[in-house]
Image 1: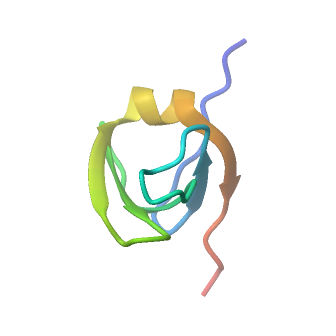
Image 2: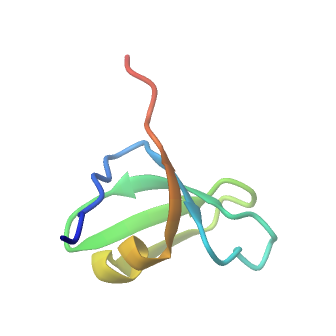
Length: 66
């Protein structure tokens, strides 16, 4: 059975491939059919399809509760 990961705003995703700056961690800024990610290393943002992001996730660090 395929498990769908829960991705929320503020979560930190560690992806399989690094960003060109060398960082593998990205902060989730917006979710939906597309996911907006911001690189933790250099601050560059990008919008990727949810399906592509879900395949690339290695680890999810939940956002701290406020």
